[in-house]
Every structure is written in C-alpha cells, then in structure tokens.
Image (cartoon, rainbow, N blue to C red; front, side):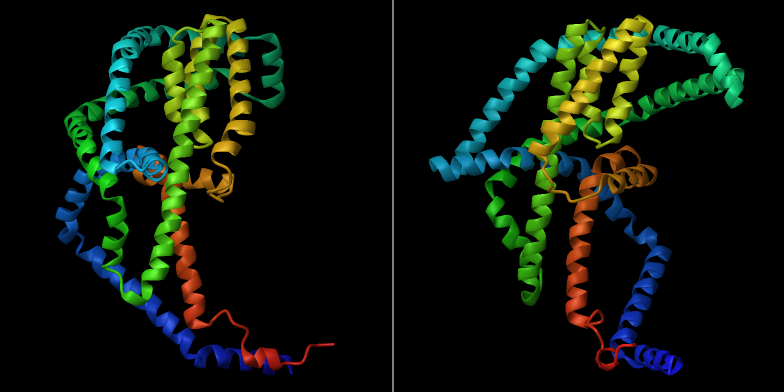
Length: 388
C-alpha cells in the first residue's frame, strides 16, 4: 500500500499540467540567459550609458529621499507650492555648504594632510608595539602553549600592511582618474533633483502607463513597498552616520585624541555600511591611539564602546526600527557577496539592493502561488485516510 501511494503521487506530479508548465518556463528562462550571454557584446553601448548615468541618479536618489519629506510637509501643512519649497531648501543647503567649506574644510584638510604625512610613523609605531607585545613573557608562555610562531606572525603582519598600503596607493590613482566624472555628476545632481522633486506625483503614473492594465494595482503596491524600504534605509542610515560621527568627535575631543575630526568623519562615512562599517572605522583610531600611549588606547576603546552601545540600544531602534525585516547574519553575507562581486559600490548598495530584490521576489512568489495553485493541497492527498 505505501508503494502504491507513492506511485500515485509520482503519476500526479508527472501528469499535472501546472508542473510541466513550470518546468517549461524554467527551461525557456535558462535558454534566454544562455543566448543573452553569447551576444553580450550587443549590450555594450547600453552598459556604457548605464555607467554614465548611474552616479548622478544614485546621488539624486539619496538627495531626493532626504529632501522630499520636507517638501511634502511644507505642501501639506502650510500649503506652500512645491517650487517655492524647493527653492528655499536649495538656498538653505547652499548657505550650510558655504559655512562648512569656510569653517570645517580647512581644519579637516589640515588634519588629513598631517595624518598622511605622519601615517608611516604611526604604522612603524604600531608594528613596534605589536612586536613588543609578542616579545612579552606572558605572551611567550601563551604562544608556546598554543604553538604560535611569533616570527612568522610578524612577517605576515608586515606583509599584509605593505600589501594594504600598496593597494591603497594604486587605488588612489584610479580614484583620481574619475575626478572629472564625479564632478560632472555632482554638477548635474541639483538640476535632476529639482525636476524630480517638482514632478514627483507624475512619476508613478508615468511608470505605470507602461505596465499592462491588469497588473497596475499589484505593480503600484510593489513600487510603494520598495519606496518605503529604500527611503527608510537611506534616511535612517544617514542620520545614524551623522550621530555616530558627532558622538565620536565629542568623545575624541574629551580624551584629547589626535586627528579627532578626521577619525570621526571616517567613522561617519564607514557607518553607512551596516555591521562591517564600524569594524573598518575603528582601525585608524586604534593605530593613532596605540602609538600615542596605552592609556589613550584604553580611553579610545571606552569611548568607542559607549558610542556603539548608544547607537545599538537607542539610536538605531528609534530611527530604523524594524523596517528592513532582514536578519543581521543575512545582511553580513549580502554585504560580503556584493563586495566580492561589485567592489565598493556593491558594499554600499548591498542592503538596499537586497531589500528591493526581496520585495520583488516576495510579490512574484505570491503571484506564482495564486496563479498556479502548486502549493494548494492536492485533492488526492486530502482524500487519503490518515495512517493509524
């Protein structure tokens, strides 16, 4: 009897048209991917165009999600026309940027220049401290117990440091080569942003006009959910980065750490990357504090721990909440994978990109279940008597 039941199930799976249709669709998709891979050279002009407009639209999108709530608030609360609100915002931004350039940039530039000049000294000092630690009596007992080769450890550390520095200098050359492209992108952002903020309400109907009528309601819900995910992430992550940078700058000033402004700015910028950003940002602060004195290193670690606790327990829950609904382990693997595939851009866009793909995949799966009925319990299995 059990053998007969299994044979009936296999026959049902083979003869069910929906299963066969699903397999045919998968086969056609695979063939399309194979054909597109063979003629990828046809899409090279489109890839060049995409790379050209990617950075301006990325910066415009970030600015849009930051400024659009203000424009919406001014329009709904005070009945101010969107054009006037945008002009006022532009004037405020220009004023703030002028003050930052006049007051903050000279100090930041001075500290960056000094840090670049002193970085070889700090690197040698950190290596010397590391060698002193390895030569410590208690460490010698520990390494003899664990079987650690201290000389090999020092050589590997030095090799990694040299490789890191050489890669950094080679990366600077590629960055310098893209300065013109970046400047042009920044110049075009205000113009694109103005029309995007001004005609925001016309954007959704324009996009939906290309979607078949019977799919417009579902597509609109998908667009709204994607917009909510992206806007929550961008606003929350930028606010959190500013809070972390401000708190660290205050803490570094209190303990008297050198290059406090530069180190706080580095921490604020790297905090855009969840979970992995703080680990990257603490490295230069550790080097500077380690070379200064052991007491300064302890103070820096205390400040860093306090800021991370404040960010994890109070700032992030209040600002981000649980809008992303993504497990931290998933985020870490997504960031690592995107970094290996697309480099720094992939690391920055990993989480919002994953959120968009998750929304699309979730709605496609719901639609697939509804249309095919493959996940409904089959009538033959419903009718089977339960085994006793």
